[in-house]
Image (tube, rainbow, N blue to C red; front, side):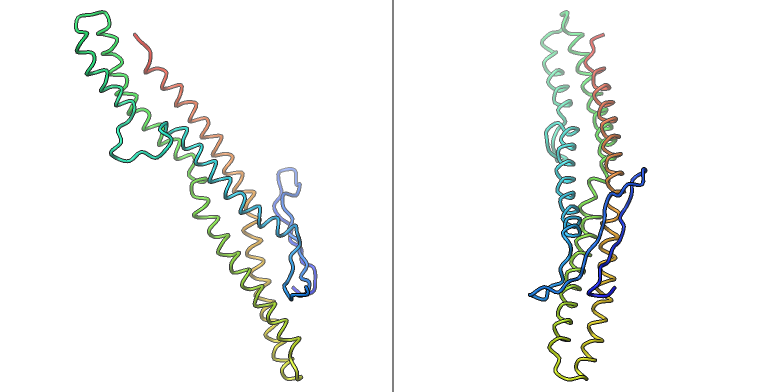
Amino acid sequence: MNSESEVKNQGGSNQDGKRLFKFSFNVNKKTDDQTEMTGEFVGDVQHFCDYDEAVAKCFQLLEACYIPVGGKPSKDDEDSFQKMATALHDFKTHFQNTPHSQALDTFDSNMKAACAARKAHQKDQKYQLRHLRRFHVDDFQKFLTQRKAFDESRKRMDQAKVDVRDAKTTAQIEKKAICYQMAVDDFDAQTELLIKLIDGLPKIKQTNCHDILMFLTKHKVYHADMVRFYKIT
């Protein structure tokens, strides 16, 4: 890539072949000697950051759906179904030989079974959100690392450009020009790596959407299963 030329890279496509992302930028000399990226490129980088925030919020809210207390219970926290079973077990002793005794006894047993069933359903639902849960620590951290490398490479290239401009002798110019070309080559490489990560975001989104749909299916099964524990036989 020449530092004064236009560079384009086509992003991912959907099944219809329509463009999902486009990465195009010009390397132009600004008055402050900073290489300028096009607004479209900057927007794509920002979109990756915005998606990370959206994923974090979505995961937090979905997680609260299958953990009724709205947060991660510690090992010492007793399940609400277990608490209900304990309450019914203690209370039913006051209704021996009454029409209500059998119903309370049934609910006591059902709540114990519901406790075990819900834990199994929680495990299934948590598994479906595994990619959402790992996006920030895996995909986004790789993106941040590469964006930092890109920014540092751009700074080195800009400084090398200034060094060439400020060189006084032919020998200095030739030496600085070699350094500048090396900086440009590194900038090209870092830019390509960053674009590759952004170019992979549509596929990640598809996986996340699939996981959410599977989560909703599992969550529906969870609620349908819980109904049977409240039936009086």
